[in-house]
Image (cartoon, rainbow, N blue to C red):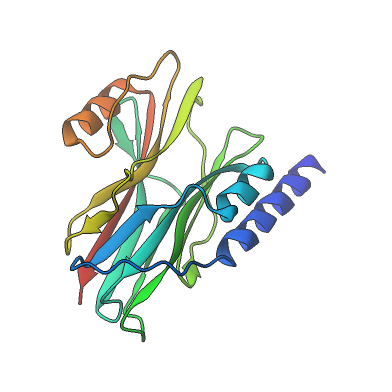
Length: 204
């Protein structure tokens, strides 16, 4: 019964996320603009449900009819990259509209069986729920991080950017920046578990 109730809570959270929208505007020459939106009512509603974490953003695609966007997760345990049985990925684009903007996010659910569940969403689309079970353990200290700073992240065509992630360790976590390549290499080497959420936008 507890497991059924938890699944229903996740389903309700996904309905809240997918039903959300935004109306901000940001005119620049970038192929895509991503800004953090941590103070939205959506984040508040998600947090109050006590089912997990939500990394929430506002996305603008100025050339949406020519853009193809991909969001995915890379997982590292003890310094080694591992393949997921259920890949975490969302890939879409070539809209019928010239410009698209709205809510984008990464929903992170911690199950009652040491499993993690992920769902990605962007304007008008979302991924299926993906499952990940850290094996053989789940680290004692964990920290989710939105790596977008106060200034919006502007994307160049074809360039990968880290937009958020998770770090876990049995003992302690050093302070690192996910926007610094050297820091990312160090955290992968030192932390027991690192999950990086990456995004790339290409012009077709």
